Image (spheres, each protein chain N blue to C red):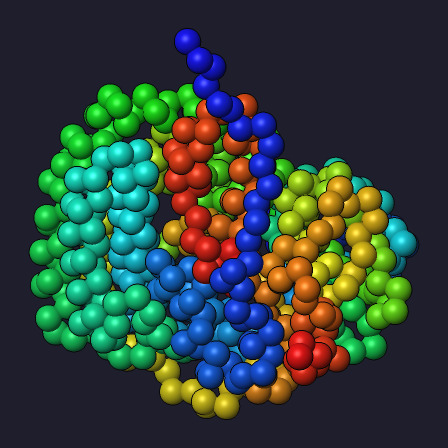
Length: 149
Length: 339
């Protein structure tokens, strides 16, 4: 499989200035884009690098904001990439990737439920793992278990 | 004649086994969390433990001794066989064949006895450790394991007689719920469920980890994409795993089985997504560290979770009676779906 350095070059070519940050870590190329261009950049990268497989999509609560991260690769071995964007805590809204990879469907539903992120254009953003009457989004760092009772 | 009842639409409902395991990880040290990872895919817990430890090792920049790598491969492949035996047995049971189930569990029992010998547990092992394994193999292990390897080919022929060459079993699965290669990749399917659709994606080859490059084995791929292909991929994988265990036993190096490391491990700040070929497909662990004793985030990429999603498109159009074969052929473990 192509190494992180080659992938970085290809990402730079495909995204240009749209990649606001680009680094390599533990064999992964990690690209950060603006939240408003999340879908557009993901689509461009899928086509340019042949990233046909969405392995994982989740968020990390960095306290100041959320970081959305998608782990993508090409089944044919052309490389792997972690694509990220930052979302504000109070208006965590981003375009859904379900039109590009149907694998995003449940992964986004889980991220919506656990972090309170809204995925625009998702066909059915209903809860997945938690009971219907659950209060709050458990994977947020400011989540308080006491809210349940 | 009455018309068969067909599935029109399905909605998958999950969550009763959700234990908030990813949240718990943020409140435990890396070592304290170790026994919990066995509860993701509880039919193949050795693989969970190995993935978790490998991910920590990547973050912390450690490398286990070669003997530990070999022991891990033996455990992972034995566990893959044990897990596939449950699949073969229960699929037969779902389709009305109760005898093969007893046979498969007889052999799985022997593997569980081997695990018991190694770590004192049969399901949730807590055997892997960052930097190696908890204990070296006891002297009785190798002879007992060789005995098992010797026995298995004849046992596999028994299953073939009972199931693979059983017309009723075969006809209920041939041509049923075909999944195309493009659809399978787009949905994020993995493991035998993906390889049965003609996509030879196996992480042991795609991005080799541990000492897998040192072993000869074939990746089981089939083109048909139906329930039967998903079954046959797994029976072939049992044979390939037996080959790997044999080679690993033969080549088992001497030396230590673990490195001493600080129990209050603090991996350097950073992040890594590591993945291995689990019994059900791509099992991934995404760990984010801020340099303290607890991770900022642990995300478990469970193959069953992604594989289960195929049901929404695979079931509609088929007879309700076919749904047991279709669901059975996906082979999900709900512990890792709900986490």
